Image 1 (spheres, helix red, strand yellow):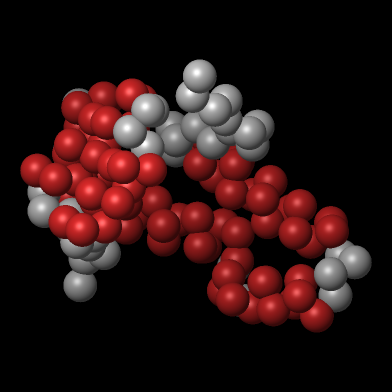
Image 2 (cartoon, rainbow, N blue to C red; image 1 turned 180 degrees about the horizontal axis):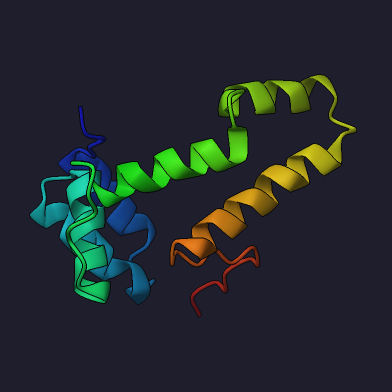
Length: 122
């Protein structure tokens, strides 16, 4: 089952972000694909980078999520890592390593993740 937003959810997001012009292409694509997040992600990726054949019969979103899970969590899974962190919140190094791994894996696959807080629309 593909993750999907309802038309009401898309409209709510559009209202929340109506002053942010950078989000409008993604929201328009979501509407075109009836809220299907995977299809929308693939369409936006193809528009920007032109690649559509990702292999393994999976969408780019699913392949990305699988790779991130593998790199960050190994055999423990993300839930296991988060549970371990919540049992010992003083272990900031564990949490930082999870975030650091996510950024490295994403960058290696051409998905830039900026840890800085985005600027608010003026």
